[in-house]
Amino acid sequence: MTYKRFFAFGCSFTEWPWTTWADIVAAVYPKAQYYNYGKKGASNQLILSRVMEADSVFNFNKDDLVIVQWTSITRESRFLVNSWRGAGNVYRDYENYGEDFYKYTDPIDYLIRDCAAIKSVHSLLTLKQCKFEFLSMVPLTDPQTLSKKKVNIDLLSNKHTEYLLQTYKPVLDFIKPSYLEVVYKGDFQNNDTRLVHSDGHPDPEQHLKYLEKVLPSVPITEEGRTLVHKDMDTLISLPRITEDNKAGGSSQSWRLAVEHLWIQSYFRAVGTTVPRNTSGLRF
Amino acid sequence: MYKRFFAFGCSFTEYRWATWADIVAYAYKDAEYYNFGKAGGSNQIIMTRVMEADEQFKFNKDDLIIVQWTGSCRESRWKDGYWGGGGGNIYVFNKQYPKEWIENWTHPTDFLIKDLAAIKAVNTLLRSTQCTHYNISMVTVSASAFNKKSDTNKSNLQAIVNGYTETLSTVRPSYQNVIFNDRDWMEKLPRPLSSRINLEDPERKEVLRLDSHPTPTEHLQYVKTVLPELTIAPDADVIAEKETALVMPGPNRESDAPLTSLFGSRPDPKRARDSFFFYKRLKEVPSQNIAPFIH
Image (cartoon, rainbow over all chains, first blue to last red; front, top):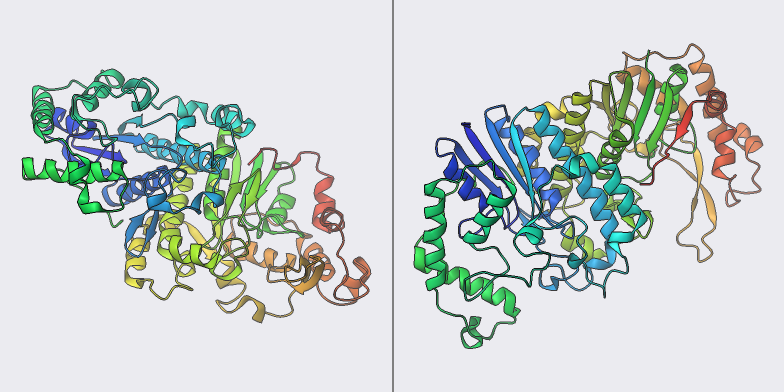
């Protein structure tokens, strides 16, 4: 199968400094124009907005491959003064959202919103007759995304959850098993990366493993594997980050400091980012 | 002609008195009538309700579906078991969010981006179901987001709107334009009366106030103007006039809902609704349905 264009949507699991699933798929279809509209910290609502805008700009058709990687429901992305704000989990990432944001939220609200978003995108891509697939970072109702201190709700045994999952079952069944299930065996602590650090994002090998598992129909090419191996070699060679070199005593959390330094170190090693076309949308 | 009629929107769709949806339903008596309007609801809520309803009812070619889009800048959320944050434009009617939160976390551009995606999403879905579908609106979509934020870059907003030209071309002229002539809504007199909880009163008593929602007569005028494809019942004018008289200040209103003063309590909404003519007639239609799903 050949495609004229390949569009990837998602969060940082889609667009990140090193090779992601999207780059590996792009290597399978080198003749297809490759657009990567992943956005770090994106909510599913942002992903919906980007898919809709991309269709307005590019008018999806039967010659396109569109893969959407859905993310956690516990995110809010807001376009404030020319940039997206809000990243990560509203119940955990106080550095992004502040201490009080969660008080105005409800996971059921997020589930209502995101089920509708997923169905919307499914309807659009079906109507446009393009080939499309849905991937995911975590199951929509994964309790690990909630903080028990902040949310007094058992998402899995909640009557609204049950109703929504049942109502939207035909669409939700279309989503492939998540990274959490496939790569991390149900717990992000089960991280078998060969890197000395993990910044919370899958390494290139893990992306490859995920693709092979959930999209076996996509024939991974030698070019794709080379991309992964080369990137892994670079990442493995990066020096360990210690408390001593944590961004000059900044108040960042250890996780964010590692992410920041790790990426800086990666850029120094490779000199450039993975080539992707991320432009074309207004927001 | 149609087997089912679904109405979606905000309080312009489901209100204390008859709306455009009831007028349409009255004309298509043989169709099952579902009104999923939600007072104070945002366009996001409207979109989620359409999606949810399609999963429940499987829209098809025998359905008439009319979606009334509302103003932008609404921050409605499902919270602790019900929809909260409703009340209209967050920059005008907010009673729930601290000023600082609104400053830090909201922007008209953000509302606009999400609303345009929602309208396109609903259009796409309904096109795929082959139902008969119309979009109507409370306010003109491109104008609604340009208020209350001085740092809004209007050219950016316009660029975003321009990207959705095709989508927006499906939305019929708004109430703001057709009924209120693009002026302040309360300038069009006389306005009806309705009771609201007085949030400044420690006892939260209800008070009668002038209401900017369209009267039944105005709703009828709107339907006739923007949806000429639809049938209007021959007695709709007479009924709308009678019902409008009931909601306007004056002797008719007082006899319908006896009040000792402007600060008296109002009739229970359900009772008040039952007393109105469109609802009375609709009750005679056994297939009428009101919001059977959870959200």
